[in-house]
Amino acid sequence: MAEKNPHVGSTLESLLRKDGTYEDAKNHAIKAVLAYKLQQAMKAQNLSKARMAERMATSRSQLDRLLDPENEGVTLHTLKCAAAAVGMRLELELRQP
Image 1 (cartoon, rainbow, N blue to C red):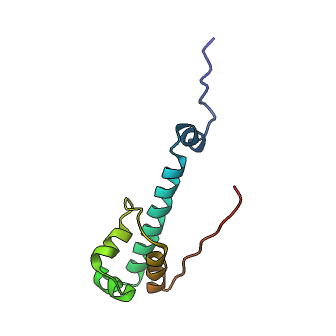
Image 2: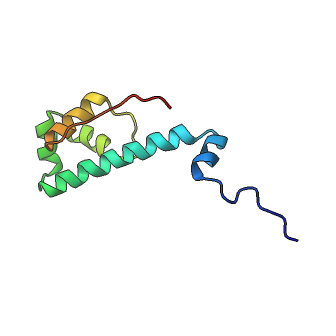
């Protein structure tokens, strides 16, 4: 009889938690989604990066950092300004785990 694989039926989340990388992966995914949504909103409104930076009252290089999914060092203020620049709002929530 074949030996049963102990990982069958486990989730990616459980693997990442066991590995200690869950929070980093989750933070990276959140930033990637925010960057993607901002890029899609810019595209829908036919906004160039220069015009978007102007609306945010910031530089193009700051906008590039915001739109870079690998760069997680973005402030809430910058995210709020970006959301407002495309007619959206940023919502954050604190919840019990």
